[in-house]
Each structure stands twice: as structure tokens, then as C-alpha cells.
Image 1: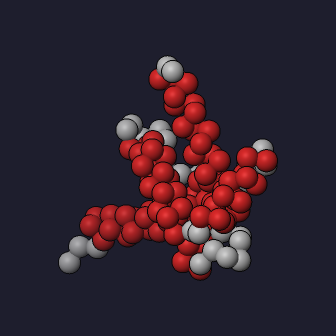
Image 2: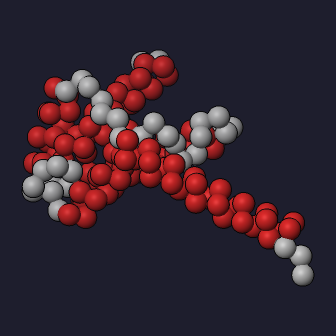
Length: 130
């Protein structure tokens, strides 16, 4: 198997796991703390906005390569095996990926908060002199 084929296989598996988490988060048998983590991971994965924009060299893809798989792995450990098995079956049957508007809004609010803090610090540094 070539590197490209291996990478494509892993990406496909991650997409299925994300969809499975999305289904598992809506299952009544999933504990509340696992639901919360699964919803956070899926909201971020389906969000059209990244916490670290992809155009930033090296760091741009860090969230896609580290944060999402780590969140998936942790959430899967918290969800009962039978729920994950059923959710994986549903994920393989469904080919349509949802888009998380809420996830995008949360990421946008985080960026606005960061901009506010930086703007306030710059303002204090340059315009408020004692």
C-alpha cells in the first residue's frame, strides 16, 4: 500500500468515526459526559471554521492531525461498545456529512474573544500612558 492510499484509508476511517460519534452523542445509552465530549468533537470537526486557520504554516493542520483524532479516541473510550458499533453502522450507511453551524459560531466567538483581548492590550500599551 502506498503512502497516499494509506493516508486516504485513514482519512476515510476518521470521517466514519466522526459520523459515528455524532450518532452516538444522540443515543440515550451514552453517558452525559461522553455525549458532551462527542458533541464538542463533532461540532469542531464539522465546523466550517478552524481554531487554527489552515493557512498558518505547520500549525494550521495541527488541529486536524492531533486535536480531532485525540478527541475522537477519548470520546470512543467513554461511549459503550454496543452504542459505538450501532453508530458506526449508521455512519457507514449515511454518506451526507452535516455542517455544524453552532461549531462555527463557537469558533468565531473564541476568535472574537482573542481579538478583543489583544486589541485591549494594544490599546492600553499605546494609548493609555500614565
